[in-house]
Image (cartoon, rainbow, N blue to C red; front, side, top):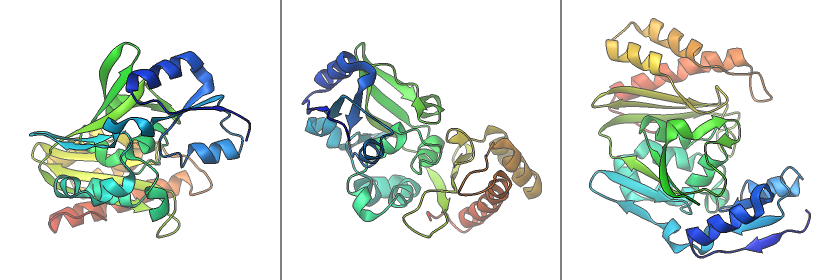
Length: 277
């Protein structure tokens, strides 16, 4: 690991200015569970590390009348155990608790899970079906990015230079939802495929991870679900709407098969009253 400068700003403005000053040579440290490993392995070589944990406002979970906002420094274990999140979004809580080990979740954050822009980010699929919005601070002030516009490609987001995600705002959405994850081991493993299915008041919503370069919604499959199409047609559409690849975890063909299996099981769970698994 090569030498680097360490900064611990106390405001978003200070953190953003540091990012601008150091440009591509700077990297944000939040939970650090991904960054430290990549630095150790020589995959990321920052000259400046900007630690956000000195910014108090980023540690809050805030409930308003119509939304719940999760701050950038809120850990996955807090998301998984928070009563407000568990009440409104039990499938998001389940997704948070599915990431890594308990020790990792004590450090890793929900926002970090999103900003890594991994195709298999477990918390991305529930936030996708909930139409969550990323709240961002940057050199030009504050702006919002709908989560479906946030992911651009593998490890690439729509953030501009100097911008920092300060939280994710989630609309309270009535309905029954299911999160499911397929992995090579029951625990402490990355997703081979992950899925969130939500039967909201305005219709079905469906999102998958690890089946495309980014987490994705499946609008054509949602349309068939909302039309009450035959189950076989729905499952086939879902399998062809994703774009998986062959890799060390599974083949593309296996992933397409599992997309159908997970969707069928999710529909069965919701018919039984909804669940988060």
